[in-house]
Image 1 (spheres, rainbow, N blue to C red):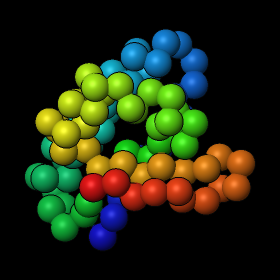
Image 2 (cartoon, helix red, strand yellow):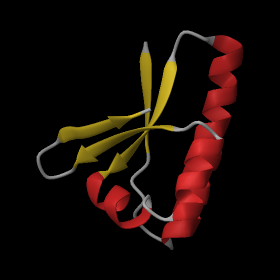
Image 3 (cartoon, rainbow, N blue to C red):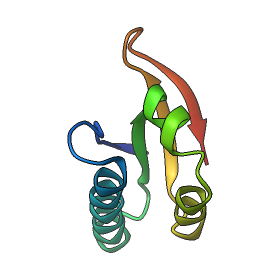
Length: 85
């Protein structure tokens, strides 16, 4: 079963928003490991944010190191653009 964690990345600096989203995601991941190991957690990211920010090497390294699965969505069409594992 999949579980999505949506973070809008609006307001404040991009790196500050990323730190907040990553920290919250990791906390949820820990709880799921303890409570419901069958669930798969994804961080849902707007397409514009993914294209503009998630291409930087430090961000890509953090995503890889912490094994963050991403769901990239289009805010205007309200559609999923990409699942990234």
